[in-house]
Amino acid sequence: MTFKADFVGKRKYFTVLSLVLIVVSIVFIFTKGFNFGVDFTGGIEISVSVPDVDKTVAEMRELLSAEDPSFAAARIIKQRPLIEEGSSEQRSRFSVIVNASESEQWVTDKILAGLESEGVSESNILSVSTISGYAAQEIRGYAWIA
View 1 (tube, rainbow, N blue to C red):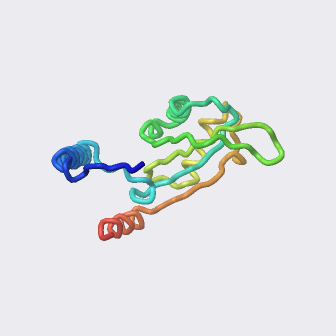
View 2 (cartoon, rainbow, N blue to C red):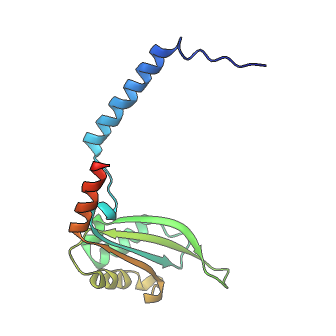
View 3 (cartoon, one colour):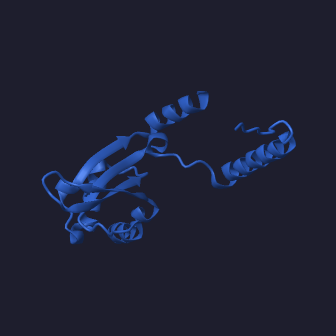
């Protein structure tokens, strides 16, 4: 059994479909803009584990915003649940990205203070990454060249 697809005969449909997708993409670029990560914008990314597996991003934002209003604009991403070695306990893992000029210690302290009621301590901070504005600008420039 052979399958024959008439792509050449349908070229007008595929051309129109391609043009529509290109126009929609351009509209999204100009209306929504690009969603640059911490590597391109600069800032601080802190990965933290929380005992409550069912914790949502909205609940995290509410807890952190109560500690400092600048966290209302932070990007908070829920990552895969974390299972620690030697334990059957699952923990939620969140990445909190802040475009702040404050020090990483200040941001870490605010996160710990905001999540203290959830049983989060300094040992629950999994990683802290800081990218300076200059490094981010340089990376963004190289990305456009590529």
